[in-house]
Image (cartoon, rainbow, N blue to C red; front, side):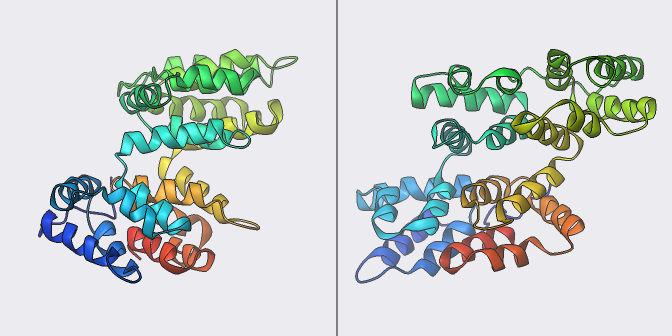
Length: 314
């Protein structure tokens, strides 16, 4: 894993808290100081600063920032201060309950995390919203996509490192018989195999499918499914094949066409900055022949842009 944000060695939480206080006191706000401190510390260090701020000044850093900042700059600064699991739970809730369900964000959040993280996110979701992820998905989705998302939300994927070629051949045959070799599509077979098998095993299944049938599993998905179900399955398969490339593609799509999906841009850059953002940057440049920094620079502006670029480590 290759993060872009690292532990700040010369860390003094009281000094950082004081600087943040000074940046918001008096006339105007010193956005540069806020950006410099919060992008230059890890999430754990930021949350220590938040606690120290309250101890030193008897005020809530989040509330003070909310009263001083606005727009996407405020959104990204607050995202930096959220505990990571809680942040993902909030994003999951927004994707389900916002205006129109954001199916691809649901697939993203449920497919990039391991079992333990998915279960933690689900538990936090229950704690925050007094309802389960599964119930909310069932209330908002239907059909094949609903079943796929519910399956992913259980955090029940095999996570062993062993692979079995014979089992992969059998699964590839089963997928073929359930899809391209069938009259109609047996969606439950796709669901079970894609949500239960380990990532390593699925890569082998995809290879065996290509060897056996002569084209990629993605082509089968294109032929057998449509709409958001097709897009969701293709996203899941891309994530299983290559997570950094999948997230690079999500970032590209967030900035493609008219307008920008700032929420996705913020979520991926903030939440992957301490995990694998360096790899995502490399994947982005390899696929789109342009650096992620260049693209973000041309698509965003002001202090918001500066925070994104600081996290990307341009």
